[in-house]
Image (cartoon, rainbow, N blue to C red; front, side, top):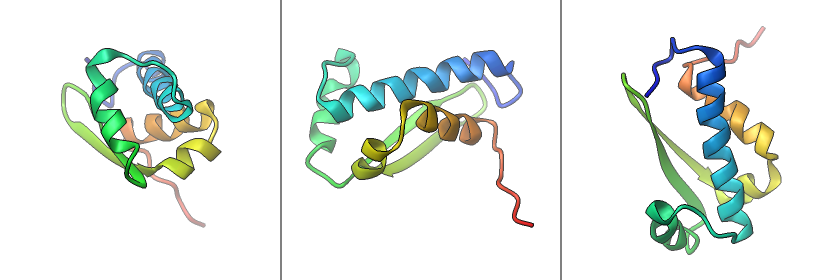
Length: 92
């Protein structure tokens, strides 16, 4: 398990795994049996709501399937990583 202070490579690996599964689910590929039923149910809705479990928190993310389809696996991973690290975009 991880915290927002875990090494970047560990957090990135976890975010990459989630992003890989999201893209596979979006393409209709076979995914981990632990999540297959819930993702199949979610396919009937416009959005997917999922959680990333960490030692110090649980991050809940709701994302439209259209956004998952239009975003690259790398882009999804970067977004999830920012959420895990509690990074905020600064507006100047």
